[in-house]
Image (cartoon, rainbow, N blue to C red; front, side):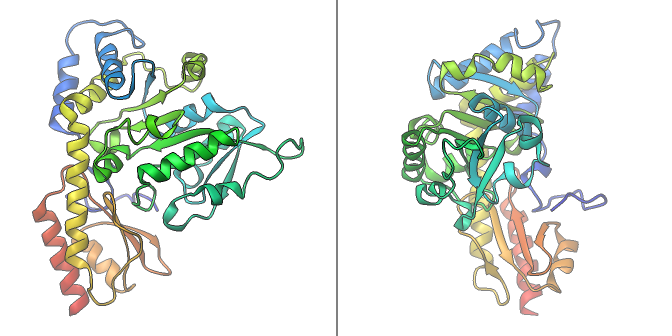
Length: 350
């Protein structure tokens, strides 16, 4: 799945990455663009962003703003393991399928993937990758990593996450949550950010802002002080120490102010549910995974796909089987959904 050159640039259902920045985020960046300020994170905007995270997650968390989600994931994992150690994750996890091998190349650590229904791990599934502990011939499992919400638009419940966190810690593993769309998961569950991260035993969180209204802002969040000791150096070596960090931090602060992060995600989720309801039962259309956040995975007749893409662009995940993804964003409107649903209905019913 790629973002092709020449694809339509108007409203699409391709990805929440295609959506613009939220006006409040743009305003925050403009407000930060006044006068001089200390570089490398020693500025009031970064202090403010960290304070907002701590208000949500606890006064002892450490927060490191970075440019993008790949870096947030890789740096979180670097804080948790060494090169001879390994990460257990779902076979379709973003770190395994969409990071161009960055974790393996940058960390030298192995990913131990597990086939997981609807992209959700369970303790029993994760336990299948614990073989070889103590054997010098095998990479040693050290981290359990899950994505919330998942790469197939499903959401772990709080109880499911807690069970995974408890299993990981009982087996000497650390627990990482890839939260590129953690806001969508929290909105779906109706819980706080803390309840779906720290309170379920997470040791590290990749907090995503870019898919939820930011221009380009993510954060490494570490819940144990000892894990953060080397992160200032790891972030620098990882080429993620932003000299003008105030612009990234201002974006994060704007999203966390007044729970804009949650409102944006709630809007995207609600419109995905509206689209699901509008197309359910149409002939030739199969909804492949439960729609629990802002992604709908459907299987369509092959001949219908290019015609529908001319109406509104979306990604095809498997050209042989017609598996496609429709994704809503913070700026998706009811009118957008209704127009597209009408086009799908017309195409499939003739």
